Length: 306
Image (cartoon, rainbow, N blue to C red; front, top):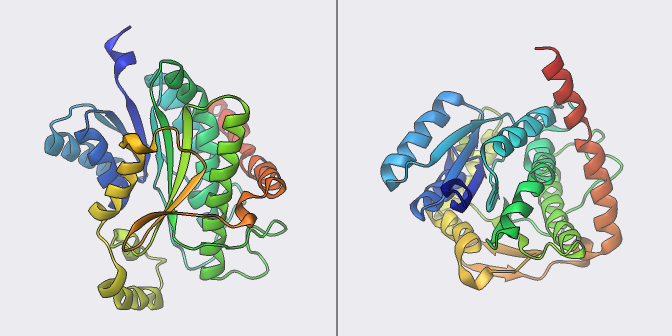
């Protein structure tokens, strides 16, 4: 077996800032090859170099991708699969909070596209090389980093929130989507005897990250965060420790379909039946497939145009 095959590979979306960056740093410090995903190529190159220098691990590289677009998700997965023979850790940390409704080129509400649909699509595209890694006897773990909201609503008839867009409605839908996806993906992996590929969801409370500095982060949201910070806020480094625990700790080996929350304390939570009900999971899976179905078609179209 080559050295390439023996290296554990990790891919972290949203890895150029905040929680994702600290998770990437922790994985690199643990000796893994790390792929950092972000939109800004110059920033990504700087972050990869910084993590290499601070950890002493030269195996950190940057993968550019705009995760609002399904064709970019497909291109990213193809690029990762062309470089790596296996994937041991997949961390979904990329997220946005836009206080206004905006559709992507795929006609998906932009918050939902990044915070959920891209995660579903990227996971499905990368599962083949994750399964390859698991067949080599290595642990393969998927960790989704989401918001702390529980018992939200998925608006099946209007996931784009066309009729009534609101920040809290959007955030609660995204959180519920990630929760249902975690449980349903675990169920489907187990049904196919892929027991060494596990998925968990880490629901984060208030975290001080640069997401607040975005142009679409409304002023009232900033004021609310300033009130909550002294009581609940945690640093990106603190938040990343919980994610790294789920990725690397022996006690979570084999644990799948589980939800955790990290506010002041890190703990596992019992999901509501709106998350665990099989019919809801099946229905949402089918919706997710339809939302991400344009990835292959659009990607092939973009290739033929070049």
